[in-house]
Image 1 (cartoon, rainbow, N blue to C red):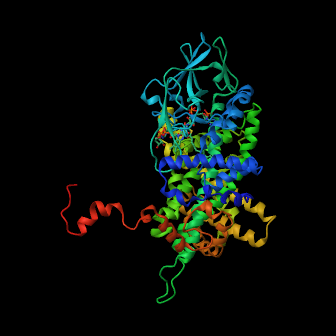
Image 2: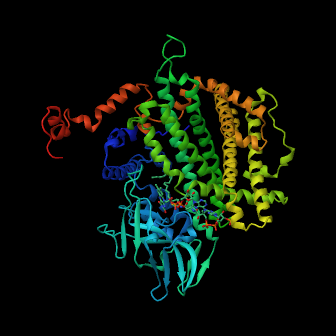
Image 3: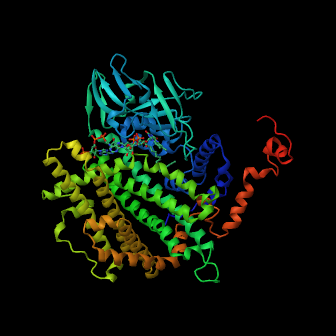
Length: 632
Ligand SMILES: CC/C=C\C/C=C\C/C=C\C/C=C\CCCCC(=O)SCCNC(=O)CCNC(=O)[C@H](O)C(C)(C)COP(=O)(O)OP(=O)(O)OC[C@H]1O[C@@H](n2cnc3c(N)ncnc32)[C@H](O)[C@@H]1OP(=O)(O)O
Ligand SMILES: Cc1cc2nc3c(=O)[nH]c(=O)nc-3n(C[C@H](O)[C@H](O)[C@H](O)COP(=O)(O)OP(=O)(O)OC[C@H]3O[C@@H](n4cnc5c(N)ncnc54)[C@H](O)[C@@H]3O)c2cc1C
């Protein structure tokens, strides 16, 4: 599925990219190693004439275990999106050649979600033609930005622009943090690392206090708004245009989620094919655990999610490219659509994979708890995806806000955006397309069910909001009264998007691939659809997209499809074409020698490098020999 990386051999021939040692690394070693890796990938890029795409794939091959993540994924994209042509000409070459190292400093100790409430100020001083940056109190300090702690020389700081006594809202400013001579913080800047996290510890997420730091007026990133020498504020685009970098990263998170769940499902499926435990027949040979229906029920959702997210990322990438090209030409028509879609899908993708990764870990039994299995480690690295770039609840609510606008338009007989075109249908004329058991094997029928459920969820919450408003509730309490249903409606829309992309992509592939391959993909797509309905059956029933009889058929078909997928399960994860060095798991190796690799990993364990541990001489010797213990 991943475009085969022709340079994989070159990459993994390097000891630096052979990952077995990382488990014992301290934070400082992880941090240093990550920087070392990115610089070496850059050298390889030059040595072998790699394209930018090759470079990006190399990073994915290393499971993003590299340095300068925010520099590459936010700082450079923010300059591209928020700076004027002159500013780009000045900063992009420096950033692209790593002569300046950047971060995106938006979140503060006191606020991450509510950007309007950010407290950092950039006050224009017309006497010196400068902005004065200030974090006025404890809660205003920047807190979390990646690479800020120890690496970044520069930050794009998001601050409230103050001219005279007037606040012009959040705007981006380029601020130099550290000397380019000796890396010491510049005057007025207090900066450091925020401490160890549950995962992703190679990244030096940092804090930043700005004490009246002065920057030239030209350092306000001025593509969307600028301040003139005489202190006039001129806005050339919607103020939401300054949120553009976040939109891009939300798209990248869908891919990141896809990459992690591919790893998880690959480890779980390969290991379950190797692991034998018990038997269903008395005295019979022990079964591969992958043959137990319960094991399939635990793991195949992650397999199906891997493919669903792959197709959805591809589809969203195309949507994003069209929107981005328009936006860069100054046309913001698609801004609301792409923001609404990507907020919801970022949340749905990260929710899905964090849930399924834990199921993959459990499916590996006790060995899944070992670091060498890697599946737990992957989960820890993936957990922040539900928070970064907007907490998932908040992102679903952004998506719901977009859906409410779309349904209002549909009800008023106006045009709606293409991804919500289903809202134009007559919801009452729906009849469930599944009228007998065998109808459940038609993915297009399932798609109709998903569509009705999403439509119904959105219409129902829109009606309830309307009712609350008409009953005298003010706007905000009516909204608060319906937040849970709004999130459910957004989830329903996102699940429909995944199903739709899956069905449409498989239909497109059917035209070019062999019938054997097509039927395997159709089966997986069908399973994805059936499983999604069963896991949210309450909502599908409530929306009357299905009835109890249909649910019974769908449940039966879901179980049948587990058995149908089983013969192809290993091939479906092999098709990810992931190198053992990418997956790094003792359990999920291509050669299937899980036990041998687990034992090798145990032998490499630092504790095993001496036969007798220092604790023996300190405590155990006297204890075992019955000697009185020294005062402890
Ligand atoms: C080496 C590695 C190389 C590559 C790596 C590969 C992949 C990288 C993958 C991941 C990246 C790595 C790590 C991740 C690091 C994460 C970094 C961060 O977390 S940065 C900080 C992110 N912060 C947030 O996301 C904050 C969340 N909050 C918000 O977005 C907003 O405040 C809000 C919640 C949307 C509310 O906005 P606002 O305060 O303006 O409130 P309003 O309700 O008044 O306005 C809503 C109004 O605005 C529209 N809108 C909101 N956002 C956007 C947008 N982004 N674009 C367009 N429009 C937007 C919204 O639709 C409403 O419109 P209206 O209904 O009024 O028309
Ligand atoms: C690993 C990591 C890396 C990060 N990197 C960066 C970075 O490089 N740059 C940067 O600027 N930031 C970064 N962040 C910060 C990140 O963007 C924020 O943590 C995120 O946007 C969530 O904001 P918050 O922490 O303020 O959560 P909060 O908003 O405080 O959320 C707390 C709870 O309140 C709920 N809540 C909040 N508002 C609402 C609402 N309006 N309606 C309903 N419920 C609500 C949430 O759902 C959540 O349950 C990073 C964070 C992490 C964990």
